[in-house]
Image 1 (spheres, rainbow, N blue to C red):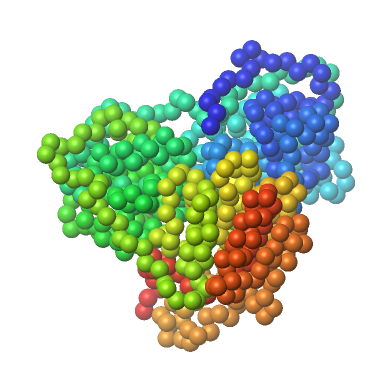
Image 2: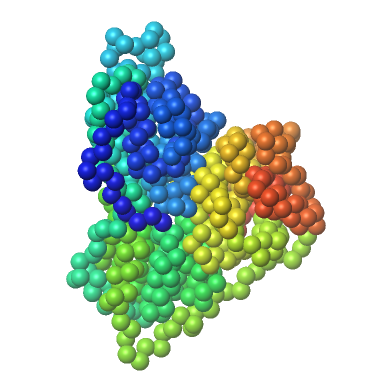
Length: 591
């Protein structure tokens, strides 16, 4: 990661500009953006020309996408690896409407992103007939203001570069979320008669962040250090290796047990004896048991803390310590803040800083016998039959990649968390935040872009519904030679909804065997590998038998190692892990 560096300590004058959009492009280069993802649009044609003819399509380089939603998803995936923002350009109000779902995902997943919108001239006298009128809105950002961090619609070049600088600062300041600046098309295309100074900016991650008060830290230390059965809930934490090691050190100092969550990226080594078996998208049975016995909980920006604690009630007193800045983003429109937790001590900082600070003050009680080695995870249980299900797919994929460093960019809802150990912060990147189906392919491309040229191989296990909604995002990987492997766990159904329909039918005493109607992606079954080949990727499959899977995976890995973006279609039985099924049962209607 880059350290925070200031650029433009003395305001830099741009002396050769002829067009306003050249200055905007210079700003994007100044902040060190390597790429800008976009689907072309006339509302930012001035900026587009400047990126090409003024900057030479370099620093930032354009990444052409086939849909605005995929451009945002790409930047989302990139940020999940690097923790730094990319730029995205969206065409007017129509492009923003296309991108809105992906923006909500990025908001709910708390990732940084500099999003640049555009509009037809705000001066009505300068609008072209018809098209400029329907592509101009009085308050464009109102479409998404409830799930972005900050926005502006400046009306001069000087105001535009200042707004971009502010948006850049705000998106990079935790808690992260996208920011949005609308460029007026007329401003972009103004010929300049004098130079315009660029604002002073910084790049990289902020080094100076809020820290908790010493009083709160010491109270948290006393609660956690004095607990008999402390538990750490590992939520949205950083990808850095030092922060990873710090979390391990803190857990071992406390003698705590650790619960992780497949909704977020890898946060703690799942092979560690303190790790509780059964991580998933819902709280598993072993995690419920451990959490219900806890007397102190440290939540590190845990997603849905109150909902999780409610799944594991305790008969004795339990003190909650929460390290998060998330309340700064909560608003009345989106309920992604979840239920309000009953927290005794709040550490209003990032989880990484909270852990770093706690390590300085935590003390283990004298004569304490609580050690992490006392906590042994349950053994992994696998089916030993010949069925090709998600468990079988996981076993084969893990076996064939055993000697490779893999980054699992995405896993499907039915995945069993015990099927794959995570022992590095880039072993797994988590879900998409907002549950927006169709995000997986674009996020895979963005993560693979961030990992390109590195030793870690980007692999995503996608559901077939997710793949089919977002498959055209993979064209960008073919266009820009971004190696990746998308393994489609193809159950030929929107199976999550089949399960919901079955629950409703049972609750109402109706025919649950009809749950598949309106859900199956079959008759005809789409040729997923052919779809990949049609866009310039490698396509393998469909694989329908377990004994044919190892050779297919090897073929796909050989292509990935050779630098080719590849899709492997694996037809699996429909089914969910125990934790996922339990979670769905809890949320189902009852008689």
